[in-house]
Image (cartoon, rainbow, N blue to C red; front, side, top):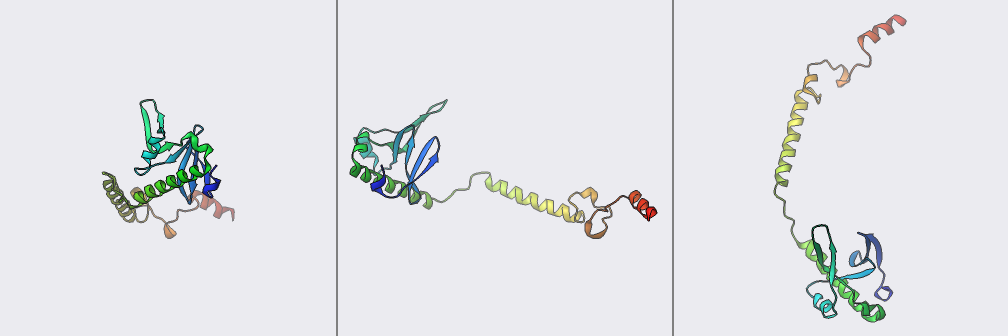
Length: 166
């Protein structure tokens, strides 16, 4: 169906499929219905065809996804016009991706605080480690470590048995 449009990639997405060109998803196939990407520039065109935006129902409410609109049924028999609508949908998807890339990310409240806490906790753990003579647990700091902090391989009782056996 999209052959005149050019090469497209189809991959599983949600409970259906996403249709992409040049790595940008411009259409969805959900519940045997094709939805094309739309924005302020193209929504009027969908409305004039009597199309509806994609929507689904949860337990609490009905959610409408205004960025994907149902493909008018008549376009299934009009391949040239289908290509035109698909190109418009791809352009809308590219505009949305560009706008998303430009939008500066805002730090969520509490994330900076969490990062500071994590850094402080890391510094505290490092200080405890160094205070304990390299041991992660402070209670082991007073214990003799032997060579380079290694624990003895055998207990003293095992060592004396070995020396008697020789």
